[in-house]
Figure 1 (tube, one colour):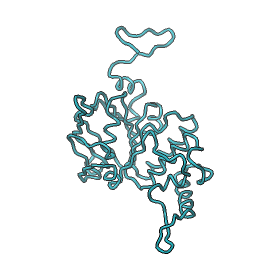
Figure 2 (cartoon, rainbow, N blue to C red):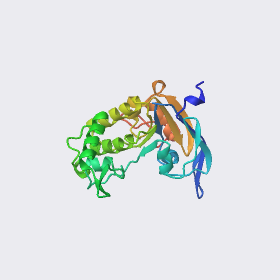
Figure 3 (tube, helix red, strand yellow):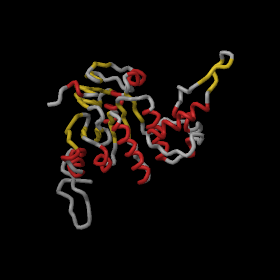
Figure 4 (cartoon, helix red, strand yellow):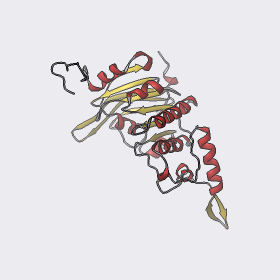
Length: 265
């Protein structure tokens, strides 16, 4: 067994109820330094709620969280960020009318003072932005471009780059490859590989199951607010993962193949 001290994240007995709905029921999650964990499940399985607990956006009713072996208690995303936990949400939270550099440094722009008045140091900001993007292998031709003029993959890369620039120990990504073209998907997956190679622990939430087998070390499957399975990625396949997600033997409809009795698609 792996010693508990080697875990970057240990969540134990996490529960959360909204009125009569039990969103999370005694859920646990572990994550090692530099590990990429695929967190999967059908809509309503609880994976987004669990990730929001770890990112400080949701306060659990029960359960404990440890980061690098130390107990933590998050009441806001700022608390999680102070513990070096970052989350990239599906909506990206980018400012479309602000340029690339401005989005990367939003809220922490470099400044200099003139007669005691802080002035935005645009030159330094763009220089740092270029170095930041190059270090992550992100190809953006000009940091002066407004985000609204970028492709979906470039926007996703900017959101991930911004989170990575906070030097996180844990990076949570919610559907980072949704609605992207094939080439853009590969660029985002390569960015995940780059970040994890630096020792950052990554949680990847996705419905694109093929992506799991390209970047993940392990997967955790959730069903109706509970853990149902964990698998090393080398010891499973897409068919098994689908079966675990839907909670029953899945039989796909295809030409010449009948659906198992009692099953529905």
